[in-house]
Amino acid sequence: MSKTGTSVPSRLFRRAPWENAATVLIALGIVMLMQPFSMWAFGWSFAVILTGTVAFVIVSHFPE
Image: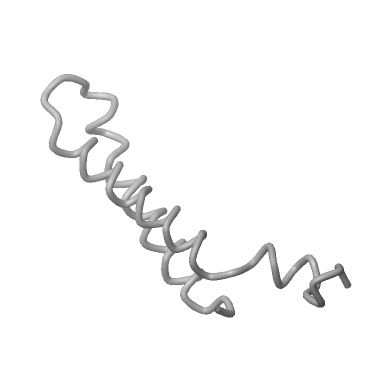
């Protein structure tokens, strides 16, 4: 227990920061999908969007 009364895992696995990170990952994948410059970014865009979506689904089960 820390001084505030919450354990390290409960502070580490709070929902809000991880949901924000997953949302940023999804947005990055969409930008990669829509840009006209790099075929590499376009090729990896679906994997990035899928990773962000799966992460968001998992993180939505974390405690508040």
